[in-house]
Structure formats: C-alpha cells, structure tokens
Length: 432
Image: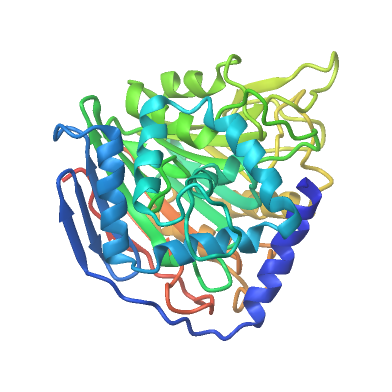
C-alpha cells in the first residue's frame, strides 16, 4: 500500500495541474459564535478558538465545533469525503478502516470524544460509502488519522538562533508540502486553531476538524511540527498511537522543549509511521528523528534520538553550521537508517539550504528566512521540484519567533489551483 500511495500522490498532483485553475468556493456564514467555540472567516483561512474552560465536555465541544464548521463551510462534508476518496483507491478504502480501528484504541479519551462528538453532527452515521459526499464516523477518524494511516507528505524546516539570528533569538521556518485536492479541498478548510484549557493554550496551524498537530506551538513558547520520514519498513498499525494527537498532548501538558521532546521520544509510545518532529523554543531548535521501525547501523539498533547543530551525522552527510538546524524528509544522525543519500528530493533540498548559509557573516532576519523558504527560479511549476523548498505542492509556510510569539503564515489560495509566483505571508495574532 505504501508504494501505491507514493505513486498516487504524483498522479493526483498531475491531475490537479491539468484542471481548470479557478475554483468555485461555496460561501457560508462569515462568523460563528457558540458556547466554547468561535470561528471567523479571515478570507484565506479560518480563525478558530476552542475554549475548554467554559464547562463543556470534550464531546460537547466537538459537537459545537462541527455545527460551527457546517455554518461557515456548508459543503465541508463534501470536501472531506471527496478528499478521502481521491487519496484512496476503491480497493484500499475498506482496508484503511482496519488501520483506523487499530490506532483509534490508543487515542486519548478526551480527543476521541471530541472526534466522536463532531461525527455525531455530520450526516454519514455508521455507514461507510466512498465518495457519497457524507462524513461517517469512521471516515472522520480517518481524516484525523490521515498522517498515521495514509501519509504522502513532504516538508522542509530551517531555523536559526544565537549567532546566526539577527535578533539573537530563534527564528523558525516550516514548509508543508501536501496534496491539497483536485478541488482545493484542504486550502478551503485551512485554519489557525487556538485551544484553551486549564493548563494553558496551544495554537494549531492546520485544518478545521483536524484535532492533532501538524504545525503548532503553545503559550510556553514551544514550537513543534511533524515531517514524514519513511524507511522502507513494513507498515503495521496494531497497538500503535497517533503521533499528531500525541504531539498535541505534549504541547498541552509539558513545561519546556526538553520535556516535550522526551514525551514524543518515549520508547513505550509506538507509532505506525517513522517521522521527524522539529522543535523550537526562544533559544534553540532541535530535530527528533523518531525512527522506531527501521534499522540503524552497527548492531541494528532502532534510533529515536535528537539531532542538534553539533550532532555527528551519517557518512557522506555534512552540516557544520553553528546555531542553525534544518531538516528535509530524512534521517541523517550517525547510526540511523540512511533514507537520505539515495533520495534526490532530500539531498538537493539539503544542499540548497546549506548553500544559503555559505559565506554569510551577519545574522539572518525574519525576511532572510522567508527568502530561503520562498525562492524559486521562475514560477514554481514543477510538482516536487528538488532544487528549492517552495514548490507546486506547498500548501503552507509558517515563520515563527517563539520569544515574541510572532507568527506569519502563507496559505495556498482557496479559489485557484494556480501557484503564486510570490507567496504572501499574513501576520496572525495569537493568545490575545
């Protein structure tokens, strides 16, 4: 199934490119306000606030959130259901729910109740029908476990701090490359979601209805984002957990970056998909290479370890840049599985990032990081251009400064399939 999905991503991107550029967007209410839930349409993304301190249960918040979503995006069920159908061949559809059932059993009870509460509002009930424009309970769990059971993402990350930063503090850039759907399904539901609970607040840069963390941070100034890193190991979902939902738990409940990393690195937590998680706080950035099914070198050890700017790397891979870290979709720590050197999409992006630091004498500013992220020679026409970070598959780019909680995000336009030559970042206020 893994190889089929990798091929399917390319087919889908080709199909998307061949379609009419303009997209008809069905408009809903510009605002929704309910108990514990507010949603505001900001034009190219939705600003969402979920307040768990208002006395509602997680299931009740889920129901209220779903009612709000249907108010602002009336065709939400069609968008999500069609997106699932596009990413799964008919022969794969039923098999995927076995994976969902395996992982669902390990989801934190509160998160599971949120998803179940939302599913109760949607029209699909317990009946799974591929492409019926309804969301069933199983399909909504599938949407929330997309990275755990379907995957097919590519991402890049670059961060500076200390001597490499113009401010002396961390400046982090994160790019999400993903298939957005033949009708821009994901761009039409992209959102900045703030969740407030008794321990504090977290912010998710993702999609309405998706309750885990793809890119996010908390009010304790810890940033985290996920990246896939396949190793060729056989897929198994039995007894596995959801890493985007676990990352939400970590951001909600840990006091500092080291504790957040420890939570996600815990060998007792097993996941179905090998991955990277990039972390930043005001003073530093690190990369967790969470490889638990591929084999490392030497004695064949599994490798779930943290990479810093000073870490020793696998033979043939170099960095050598003080006060900066970067990642593409590969493991590069010494002794870890080498899924890097034979993969052009990884090696060429890695080379490009290193070149941006070559000969630099002054620290990088926020605008410098944006230039590294968005540079492309001409229009970004290639589907997965291996030369640069900004490609036709880029759905969002996030620039974040943990010290000041300064957030800027580029979101792919909702109403067109045409990739902007010059992406525009929006400044977003959080935790107000």
